[in-house]
Length: 329
Image 1 (spheres, rainbow, N blue to C red):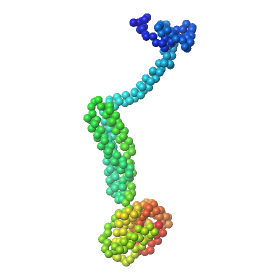
Image 2: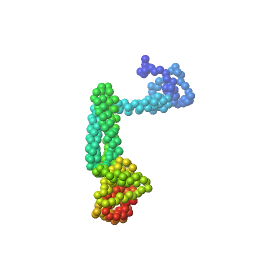
Image 3: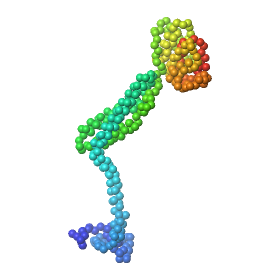
C-alpha cells in the first residue's frame, strides 16, 4: 500500500518525534525536548525545503542511528584489508611463485659462493677457522632451502581452492628468504678468523735415551713459578729433538694458549728475531715500518701479553740474547 505516492511506513517513535518537531518549527512553534508523538499516527511532510530535509536526516544520525553505523564501519574496516589480501593471494599466486623461485635461486647461489670462498680461505690460511656468524648463516640457509623445496612441492600439488592459502605461504617464505639474503656475509671480507689451535706439530725423530731429560723439562714447565728454562749442551746431543717433542706434547696438553717455535741461528740480530717472533704470531704487520729497537721491543712485549699464556721456544741459540732488548717478558 502507498500513501500519496509514497510507501506506507511502520510508525517509528524516533522518526515521528523528529518529523513532528520539524512540522511545528515550520509553523513557528517549538517542541519541548521531552515531547512525544502519538504512536498511532504517521506525519508526512510533502512540502519542505532542502535545509529541512537535511535536518530531518542529520539529526537522528547524530543520535541513535550513529550507534548502529559506527560498529558497522569498524567491522568493515577490519574485514576490508584481510579480504583484499586474501583475494590478492588467490589472483596473483603465479606471480608470488615466480618471485619465490627467483629469491630461492639467488639465496642458493649466494650460499654456494660463500662456501667456495670459505673453502679457499681455509685451504690457504693454516690455523684459521670459519667465523661463527658465517657458520650459523650457512646452516640456517641450508635448512631454509630444503623448506623452500617442500613449499614448492605443496603449491604445485595444491588445489584451486587452496590458492589463497598457498599464496600466503609462498609470500611468507619470500620474506624470510629475502631477510637471510640481506644478512648474507660480505664475501669481500674474510670469512675466517684465527683458530684456537695453539700451533702446528713439528716433524721430529723418535726420542731415544733422552726421556729423563724430557721429563725433567716437562715438570719445570708445569710449575707456575717457573718463567724461563735454559737447555744447553754440545752440538748434536739432541737438544733440538728433545724440545721438538716438548713442543708437540704441549700442543696436545692444551695447557697453554699458544706454543711458539722460533729458530735463532748464528746470524742473530735483535730486529730479525723480533720479526720472526711476530711472524710466528701472525702479527708481523703490527711492527709495521718501525725501525727503532726500543719501540719495536715495546710493541712485541704488548703482542706477547695479548697472546695470553704461552710458551716461546728459541732454538739454535749460539750467542747471549737479551730477552728484554728483544721484547720478551
